[in-house]
Length: 191
Image (cartoon, rainbow, N blue to C red; front, side, top):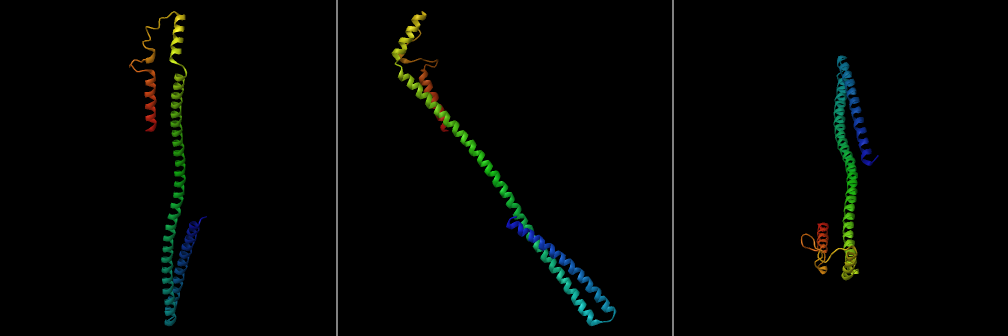
């Protein structure tokens, strides 16, 4: 049990004790009034005054105990609210930590996928450049011509200019399209 919970227990216990004492003072007041009544009936005015003072004192004691018990009960209610709020705050802190961990995991996965895309694009670009640089265009053309002669196919009519590279429907080379595509992917990753 925490300090607040111990205080709450003590406050509730004290309020209950005060209420019990107020009930006891009420019973004592009734006893003093009965004694007062008997003293009046027996015609003892001095004794009747003493019993009347005792009854009034017990009545005031009962009222004071009830007031004090009520005040302590109000404080106990405020402490109960504080204990409840602390428990809710603790629960919310746990929930927030859990959500924060989930968000970090999601961000980590997102950055890992972005890094993988960039690395893959860089690798593709590097390998295509290395392959293009590693094999001279004359050797490629000679091999294509040799295979075409063996197959009995006329290639010179279909291939317009070997230096210009392969053309697509839009009139751009395959290499230019690949560079544009990689540039678009890079811009998308930056956004």
